[in-house]
Every structure is written in structure tokens, then in C-alpha cells.
Image 1 (spheres, rainbow, N blue to C red):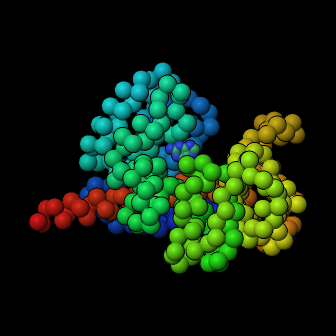
Image 2 (image 1 turned 120 degrees about the horizontal axis):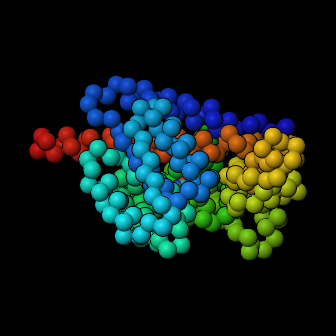
Length: 299
Ligand code: GUN
């Protein structure tokens, strides 16, 4: 039976460390602003969680809610205002955005030094070439932390990532393949058109799934003793539950747990780590900003 990788516990430890650092501050507190366009229930839940957890560690967390019909121009204007605000260290725009707004344009407008989601092309570029002074996207960074914490030896391991999104798959591949202690993996980035996907998954020492399809990975697709990381959060109908539904990942947990050596649960695996990494990025952004202000004042 696989050992459970407890993302909630690891995330709590990280957040306690950030909280301790913030308690020692004198003066300005770190500030994080999340912009939510429209009222998609899942996006609202994610944004509320991020802001609530920010407040818990001592970061000032604000949510700016804009109507679904807001113009691209107004949203860009809001970002300009936050870019110029010296009290704000982190800005995130919850995705997806309505179709009349270009997420590419919006993400590119955020000051890269405040881009705590790590989605700005400058931060993505820095990640790809291994420059450590940018921000890395939160879910991939959280997965790296989970693997590190669980002492999974990635050096030379075959990591198969299923799902090539800009938010998870692509940046995660770039992180895990880096020539760096605790990385140095041989990464295969697969997608739904990959030939013999099942056969490929069976060759994975570490299998990471981020495709948004409920219980897509079955036990036949997993090598005995593999480490399995499930990034999916899918709500499926279950009449036996009080809400009439339940959350499942992209992996058929109950059958795969008997074959894997370690596995993340859903919920309580990758999800809490995404939030912890967002707070960690905001805290690093704050420290960099304060250091730059100090350097300016003495020069
Ligand atoms: N939508 C799904 N995941 C994310 C995320 O990590 N950040 C933002 N901004 N939007 C998302």
C-alpha cells in the first residue's frame, strides 16, 4: 500500500515558517492582491482560499472582484494601478478570463517583480534557462517541494508528466529537468494525443497527471512502486453524498494506491501546496523589494 504524501501537512509547515518571519517584521507588511473577473464558483473558491490563507500568515490579502463584462482596458488599468502601488508585493489574476479579454495581454502587463503566479513571459523565460531570480509558477513549485519533502530521488529518474498546460505541465517539466540537486530528472511531457500513453506511463518512476479528467489513470497504467502525483481536482456526481457530488483527482486513487509506493490524495495533496507556494512567492517578493529599497536609500 502506498504511503500518502500529505500536502496539507507540508503546506502548513511552510506557512508556519512564513508566518514566523512576518511576525518579526517592523513596519510594512507584505501585500497580495488577487483579481477575480466574474463569479465562476470554482475560481471564487480558489481566490477566497488564497486570500484567507494569506491573512492567516500575516500577509495583507485583498480580492478585487470585477464583473464578467469588465473591459480589457479597465482590467489593464487596474493592473497598472497595482504595479505602481509600493505596498503591493504580489498581483495575481485568476484564470480563466472571459473570452473578450486576452489573458496573454493581461499577464504580460503585470510587473514581473510582482508576478507571484510566475506566468509572465520574463519569469517563464528565466525558469527555462535556470535563472533563479524570477518567480516560478505555484503548482509546479509545490510539486517539486512535495517530492523533495518525501525524499523522492529524482536524479536520473524517468518522470512522465501527462498534460502540457502553461500553468502546470510545461513549467513543471522545465523545473524537474534542471541540472540542479534534487532535480536532474529525465522528463517526458505527454498529452492526450501521445501514442500508447498507457505504455509510456508504465515506464514512469514518477508519474504526474494534470489533465482534468476524472480518474483517467488506472492501475494498469502505473509501474509497481512508482510515485504518483495527482494534480486534478474534478467534481463528480455521487448521490450518496450530502452535496450529491464528491471531489476526485485525475488518478483512480483507490486502485492505484495498491500499486504505487507513494501517492498524493485529492483533496489534501497538491492543492494546499499551490497556495503555500503563492504565499512563499509573495514573501520572497516582499523581501527582495525591501532589500532593493534599502539599497537605494544607502546609495
Ligand atoms: N487558474 C487555475 N490555476 C491557477 C493559478 O495557479 N493561478 C491563477 N491565477 N489562475 C489559475
